[in-house]
Length: 395
Image 1 (tube, helix red, strand yellow):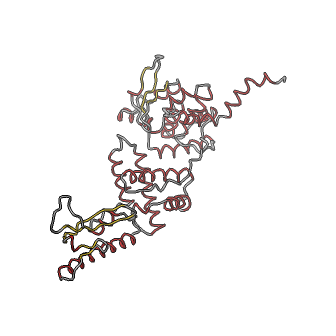
Image 2 (cartoon, rainbow, N blue to C red; image 1 turned 60 degrees about the vertical axis):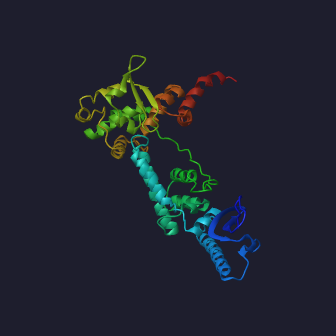
Image 3 (cartoon, one colour; image 1 turned 90 degrees about the vertical axis):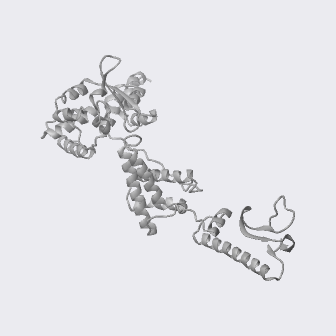
């Protein structure tokens, strides 16, 4: 019973109080009682009249409903708080948040922003991550979706195991898929749909992979090889252009005449914003790159599209590059991105270009990314040490 502050006489309202872990909430019962008849210890009305018995029976029924609400929450393995018990008791069941629905909503919003805030590649990676998550739920739990509150540390470790064993993902692929999944978890934490971060104790790191690049001899072999078809020659030319400019596939595909500018030295430069990071990249055109660019000025596809090169899909370019590598007797696993690695190593760092300049031309946001290339250049280390070898031969 709760008497109002200005109470003087008459009946006072009765409330139902729910307390969990010292925190409480109250609900009005909609009934009143004379304070003289109220028993604080029993929480019931004293007396033997029918109206007293009816009131107490009603209060008993309310209490039993709270116990039933507690049982229902326990059965769902839900976190029990005073507020949740009250809502369950009153039938105000909160909307269930499920992992796959949240993941799909994230991906739909990302798709809508492709081209403005996200690249097609990023959206594709999240589509693949969602696909793996759906398949994991089927493999592990035989369900199509799961309450987000049931995603815990055990869920993460099982998902990691699934990616490495069933999907046969390499370490870096597994870590990247879980990194994508982690973004969905962070959304849930920010919205209060999750209280504990399931990634809190998860530890896994990207393993450094040795980057493949072409040597000067291999570049010359590809450049001078007589190829069987015009399509292979075009792929070879675009690949070599990227070897001498450091452009990534998507950046050379989108290259237009407006991206060729006159630099501070009066020569031609490439000036772009990298699609991947949206960072500016300005690269002086070497004579060989300028010659390759000029050779496609009258190409019908280029004239029709306004692009500087007739670039096919990345998949086709990689397929043709494998043919070219076979023709040239190169055993390295060549992909289009190898051109960028080659520019960073053979064309620039090995020729004494400072790493700060290389980083700026590549459009790296962090010089540590560029330093990965410098670490693999044993040839450069050998050349540098040769400069002082003679000095210490007599000691």
